[in-house]
Each structure stands twice: as C-alpha cells, then as structure tokens.
Length: 489
Image (cartoon, rainbow, N blue to C red; front, side, top):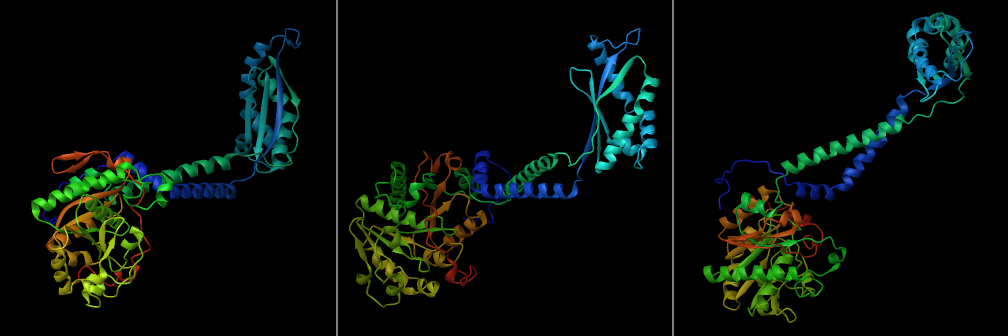
C-alpha cells in the first residue's frame, strides 16, 4: 500500500463529540489557564485602579402653592419637578460656582465629571454623589455645592423648592468596588476562550485517528474489531484477558470476532505467522496479541505466542506468568535449545516464548538468519504463531520481523499516533514482505466507535472493555533512541 501515491483531497472535518471528548481529557489545562487568567486580571486591576472616595448629598423636591407654601400632598408633581432639578444640579452655572467657591482648587471638567445625580425611584428625593480619588477634594466640592446651590437653582427655577435632607460628610475609607472581581471574571472567560481556540487548532492540525471512519477514509485498511474504553475505575485493576471473568461480555466477543477474521485470512491466504504491532507505544498491542492467541486456542487451534519485543518484553506480565529467564534472543543466539525455551501455559492452553529482561542489540538479533530458520521450523508444529513486536514507527524491529512473517495486525489507539507515523509503519511492514490485513481500533470513545466496524463488506456493532489501551510498564526510552528508521536491515 503506497501512501505516497495515494493523494486525497484535504478536508477539515471536526466531530463535535470527539472534540468534546478531547477537551475533557485536557480539562485540567483548561481549568489551570482559566484560574491563571482570573488571578492575573484580579492582580492587574487591583494595581492599576485608584481608590474612589464619595461624599453624598440628598435633596427633597417640593412644589409650591400660590402662597409659596409647600404642598406635601402633591407628590406626583414633585416627582416630575425632580427631573428638572436633576439636570439643573449639573448645569454650567452650578458647576462654575462650585469651582469658584471650593476650598481646594479644582477644574471645571473635574467637578462636572465627579458629579452624579439620581432620583430615588418612586419618590421626590434626589441623591447627588461626588466621587474623586481624594476624600478632601470630594468633601470640598460637596460642601461648596451645599453652600452655593440655592441662589442659582432658585434663579433658574422658582416653581418648587429644593431642600437638603442629608448633608455631606468627609469619607474615611474608599468605596467598596467590585470592578476588580468583574475584571477577574472577564479575564477568566477570556482565558477559557483562548484555551478552547488553541485546543481546537491543535485538534484540527494534530492529524490522528479519532474514529473508525478515519481509518477507512485516511488509511484505507480493514477494521478487525473495536475495543471501547470504559470510565469504570475498577477496570484499570482488571487483568486484560478474555479468561478473566471480571471483563465484560463485549470484550470477549470482540476478540472472538477478530479470531474469526484471522482464521478466514489464514484459510484463504495460507497465513500462519502473524505479527501484532502498533505505530507508537502504549497502544495495547500486547493486550491484543495475548488475547488473540488465547481465543485461537479456545477454538481448538495449537498456538504459539512469541514475545519479540526484546526491548520491553511484557507478555509474561500480561499473562500473569513468571519469566523463565530465557527467551527469543537466547534461542536465536544458540544459548539454549528451542525445546527449553517454549513453555506451555495450561490455563490458557497456549505455548509461549517470553522473557522479562530487555536484550542488548535487539535489531541485530532479530535480523539473524536463525530467526527465519526458527519460524520455518515452528510452522510445522503450530497452527498459528502470534508475534508481539516493538512499536513499528519507533524502531526497526517490527519491519525486520515482517520479512519472515506472513501477515500483520496493527493496533491503533484512538487519538494517539499521528497518521504519518501509522502510514510509515504500514509501508515499512508491507515493504518487508508482510501483508497488513487490518487493524484493531483500541481505547475508542463512544464518539470514535459509533460509525460501525468495516471488514470487507461486513459491519459490526460497537464493543467495549476496560481501559487497557495504556497497559504499559514504563517508557521505551532505553534502546529505542539508538535504532533509527533509516537503519538498513
């Protein structure tokens, strides 16, 4: 399958549910950024804003009778007149008089900008606030207004009386100001929005497999089965084997469906040796290879499972058996005879070649001509040989084994490996002689698995199981940086 010749029209398709699932995985980052922006906004607002001091004056408006007597009963008229006084109190004559009579020097625009006048709803009371950054200045402006307003107001409008009912006092503390908290909330919202935009950009440009449809449209390979992840925390402590009764029915049935397809491929193409690999580490290849071997054995097949991941052998741990201390590397190098390395695991009815220790120079060992001779000898003894290998795009081991294998099964975990690395893995495997017959879509979310499972012309419903896609034992750091994909076999 040559992906360099397979050119497709580029389309940006975003599945909303998949994106939401992606955001939920990164929720801690979103929360951290939101809190950081909120704290930054609160701090900056507190630093740059000035404290405000207010002096208040309250007036009562009353209409006058023909005898210049206050008619308290005419409240409605007083309320209407209050609107007129609301304007007069901020008029130019009043402001200029305050500027001239203030004990502290002030400017016209400063005085006018400090004044705010409001009518108390449903009453004939006017409240006037003088707000400045200096309590002395606020009080001086208010006092000058109290002492000089009456002559100006009476001259402008004499049909009513404007009397003070609450005199101003000098503020002893700044006003309670919630603007810093408003800024903090706005900053938090801005931070969350920026974070979501960056998530979206990253989600779009990070070209990974997120759905079964992606495998079909972007890779063009068959999906042998889909293993759904579970949010059940208890599943993380469950051994990922179909023989474990704690695993659900769907998990077991998935591997039975995969087994059927593997058996069909073996009959039609005379394949016996299958390698199981992935593009990156922690995608679940060991889980798939061990369960595939077990389910084939349950169908009466004689099966040999080989742990060929010499850098990080984990088959023994997944199967729950103790390592013998002798594995594939010892057989190929001639340190032990084949019969001494093959172990029969009675409870799973499979034969295993595995070790628990990493091996130096694994690429050189696997490319030894004895590897091919070994597999040719084993083919006559077993119906199926399942080989668990190192990640194909990380080191050359999987490509080397592909030259002596019949077919390959690729494990693709949702939203892990970039498409470029998956395509590179497929090309490396097929260019070395093994056919990639399909993949197992692992650790799939609901949004990633609801399109159906394609294999030839058949479609299969969704399967589920615990979160075993990350069943790993540390990093591939040792050794994996030494072998490059450019190395020749």
